[in-house]
Image 1: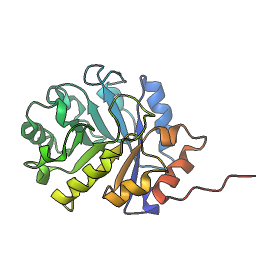
Image 2: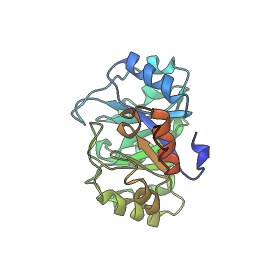
Image 3: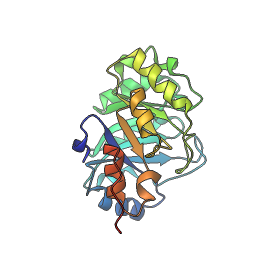
Image 4: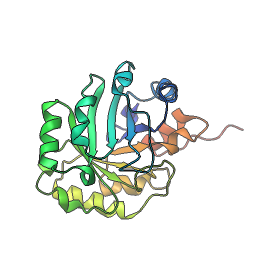
Length: 220
C-alpha cells in the first residue's frame, strides 16, 4: 500500500480489451493497492480501444478512478456514476466546456480530474484550477502503454504547482524507476503506472519500488 511512503501514491493503471483481463489484473492489484486507474478509450480521441462497460465494472468489488480518453466525455460521464468509481478524469482537449464538465462531475459527487496531453499548456486551466481535485499530466501521448516519457512534463508539473501549491498533480505515461525521482521532485504526488508494474515478473514488488524508490535485491 502507499502508506509505505505516505506522501507518494502509486496507482496501477489497467488498460485492457476484455472484462476477464481486467478482473485478472484487479485480482493482483488488490494485493498491494486499494485503487486502480481504469483506462477507457474509444478509438476516436485516441487510436486504441478498451473494455468500457460501466455496469460490468460496477460488479467488481474494487475501487477505481476512471480515465476517460474519449471524445465528448460530457455525454458519457454519467454512465460512470457507479459506487466503486471514486474519481473521473477527463481530457481538457476532449471537452467542449470545461466548466460545465466540472459541474457535471461535482453533481455526481465524484472527485474531478482534468488530464492534459503533452502538447497542452498548463495555463489553460488557470480559470478552473481551484475547482479541481487533481490534474493528470500525461507523460506520453495517450493511447498505448509502454511509451517513452516526454520530459517536457516535468516543467508542466512545476507550472501547475506554481499556479496552486496544494494541487494534487498526477503523472501518467512512461513513469518508471529511472524518472520517478525527477517527477516527484517537480511536485507530483501521484504516479499512475501500467507497464512499470505489469511488465515486471513481480508486480507487487514493482509497485513497492515505485512507492519507495528502492528496488528490492534480486535473489541469487
